[in-house]
View 1 (cartoon, rainbow, N blue to C red):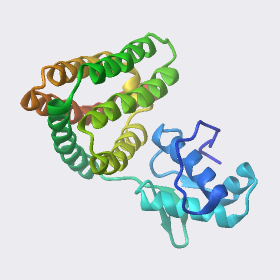
View 2 (spheres, one colour):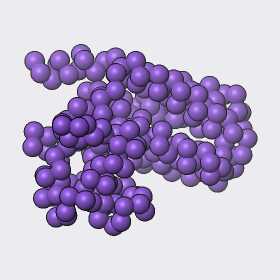
View 3 (cartoon, helix red, strand yellow):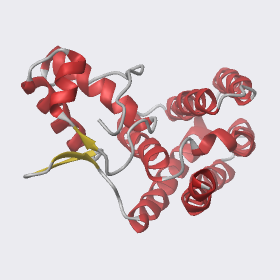
View 4 (cartoon, one colour):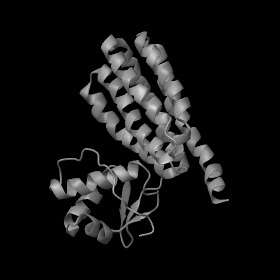
Length: 240
């Protein structure tokens, strides 16, 4: 294949589709969220069957689940391709996402506890360690995983299963858009500034200030769109 589907750690998979399709789903989803497969790339059913040692049915079921997540499209006469969203839709998504996460942060601020803040600080310390790694790929993957943990801790502060379940799919789309629609590993060179945002969010949560927590979170998410604006320049630099 033109796009190497090399192995990667998988996230938790859904129960639907059986163990084989769940395994394929989880592995391919992780590759998509980490940007190992770029937007517009074609996914070969035959290649996936060979790699995972399964029949066509589990692969197709996994791809249907990914299509339901908005990460791939199954097109007649073409096959399965990684979804490529127009830039305007990407910006629209992050505006919506910013408002949603801001509202979660406001709720979390009213329910934060000293222990919850300590747990948040522990995750933040691990992000600082990852930021020191000289390897772009290690920094990008480490930050993606720990950033999710940081925000999931805020969701736990909000103490709402509905919030957590609804937000999870948005975070998947966020990771997917950042890593498949922009320059390769864009966050690897932005961890320090993202951490400054995290620190401001943390201070608002610790102060139990819902207004500040909401504003800081919204700003943090909205600033993600700058990664797409700088992507053409960075990709041009890589090609020159």
